[in-house]
Image (cartoon, rainbow, N blue to C red; front, side):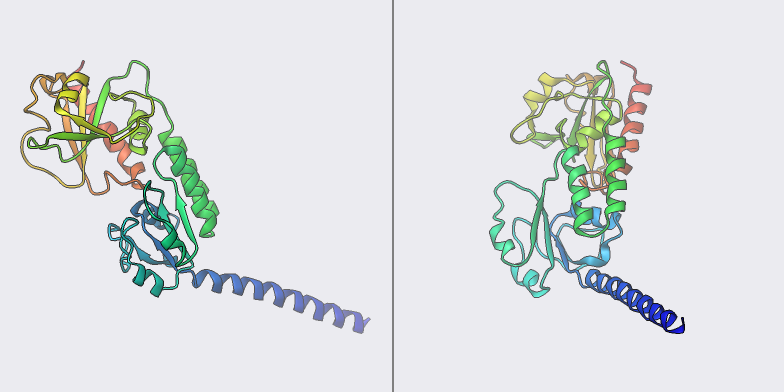
Length: 281
């Protein structure tokens, strides 16, 4: 009987040691991750997943975390990236970018990151790559829930521009309906003045095109505050200008393609609600 108990104790000890050893191996493996992010949106998502300890290098355009810079997806700093011996290189998918040189430096993953569906799916994939699946699933579900709503068919037509929209501009870059910020607009209860279908090519409007579209309101998203008159005040033929329904939302991260978009949505809705409350259609 004593011999059986002794053998049982040894067996349990070995099993426990093996399980502990496996857990320690996984912890060491995660601690040794050296991730290079060449996309600010991906970097911000990594931070939202609480996986920042894996970051070794970030894009030159990343401002949300203090890490050495690695260039950008368009002009990577190959020497610096090679120097950290990356376990994973991440970038948002961009047409025309040569990926093969990056693949020679380490495991490379290019994530589509333009539409809501792409961001949701890529967020889940990112969670799997970084061993933060529950956090990624929670964030993806929140993106789907808060940005997946459609505007009513009779909602006001709003044109959202990427600012600053100063008077000396020869044209304006607008937000597409099928983009992440386009979904932000519809989830706020407003229709995109550029239509609800997918659009191809550069989202650029000339002044003449803008006058033809003649939206009910214009919202300019910009990273820094610009002093002066309301946006596009010089384009007096526009109904939005006549009705004083033009405004700018100046906030760091307002043009972010990362999780910050969730914090921007209620600000967009509040700004537009205020315009239509003060000047009803």
